[in-house]
Length: 353
Image (cartoon, rainbow, N blue to C red; front, side, top):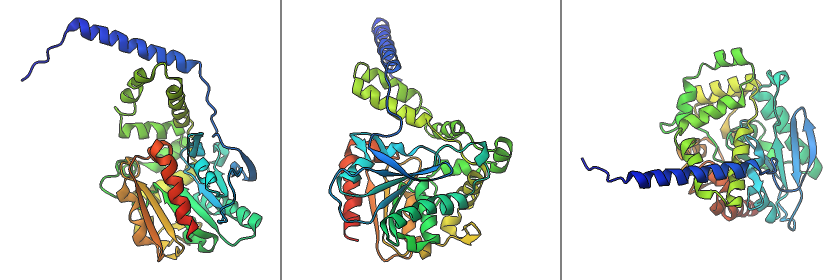
């Protein structure tokens, strides 16, 4: 066994310096404020209950494409897509002349506990899409679904194929029983009935704790130890604070919809295996015949590529494209490499369809 030759005095000095830099970073963070709801100009154009449809202000000449409706996940806030000016998928899409709308689910409270997947997929998402169709006088829109929002978008496109001109999915789970999907393995063991019966709505803090448990060292000690390296760098600290605020800003989940999603998708894998019903109607991905672009991330620990790739074998389109991004579940939105690559990939794909 090789022994480490450590100088106690040097170790103590380095530990003291490290603690000092952490303390400095903490002091600087305490004086900072960041905008919590995105950075691009937008206006509310439709509302149903707590669900709001935002339309973003154009920043470039119209590309002449059908409007793009973005459907985000229920479990986090959608401003991750517009976090700051230099880290914004939405800003990149606007710069390419797209007319961008965003579905914002809001914050469910106790009065929303009975909301079901039927409400989210058909009433709320369907209502937003119908508003855009009516505003522009068109039969169908381009639909971009992100993470769980991609799963909901697949369901909507399968139930209402005539409303979706082109379907784009990003880091979207389709097969929930792949061997490398740690989150899905955890969810399959969950007694969702007992959880919802006891709590009603499922607290966002509880889901955050579950996500952290998937990578406990990296998402706790490792993340905060890294603050020592950026102490004194205001820009880097503001980036850190925006991410932390977004992580903590997790809406509670409507109990009924949560129960249905865990059971139907995570536990019974009905989207991939068949037999899924929403609102009493079968959800058959083979009814999706529009062009599909499936974007996934090679290092995604929440939705591994193996969970996204099966979409191609489920839909009936003759125009199916995949794009694998070299990064993780969050990096696909906020990494420097994604800022040019992802908007360009999506816009160019839409332009030829």
